[in-house]
Length: 302
Image (cartoon, rainbow, N blue to C red; front, side):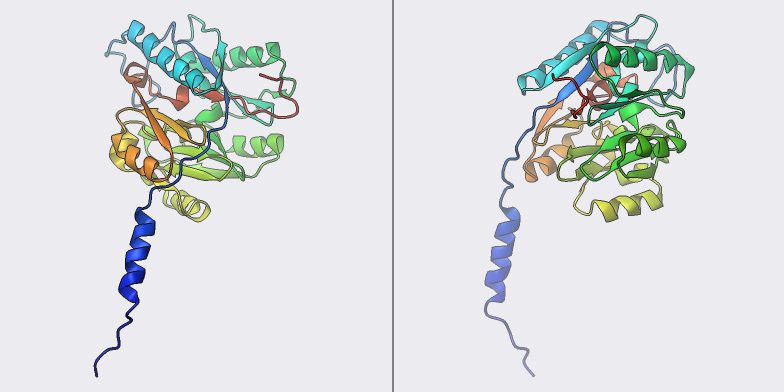
């Protein structure tokens, strides 16, 4: 018996293919307020992550130029950049994302895992006190700020396994009043959540991440919560391509993560590659240099 054919099937397939191939509409950017710290004293004299090698010299003038380029690009895109004064005894202060997490104007300070960075936490709290923030919590448990906390509209994603304590997750949930989703990091190259996951659109709960950085259970959680996430490949993750910052349209990311450019464009984002090769010697890139000051009723105006 001859199988019946659907005369409209070929037309439907062509139409569906055309829809799939149609480029996504450009997205809307939202102005953000960031806190950054110049790498005036940046150097690598110790190793607290797999990226740091004290035997490789740092070109400080180049590091400063790279950082200034990132700062200037934020400002050119309409964002506000506040500045934290660098201290000569704290070479990692350039990685300002680690110093606190700010949600709705409330500040959960950091408590660093390594003594080399202990004093950065108080430097950040002093800045917040001096700049009108009134709800500032000194944490009881180790957390490394936005290194391990990522904020979306629905969740506070929280990394654990190498730096931040699992106990910090409950502390953050109580302080911010937002559901915390714990995620286990298993690859030491991705020692902070912000090296393996980036929030692309916080209002829409849209993220990109590298599955290989996470435990099987955490991969399942991410797949369940974010079924439409952009999945990064190993080469781009290894270039710290997930250590990126998005304003909802522009995605500033390491220039070496070339495999992410077209997938981002396909979703309507505008990738903005940035060269931060010297700062990568300290184990950080775009996001590590950028702490977001999320406004709320208790936050002072920018």
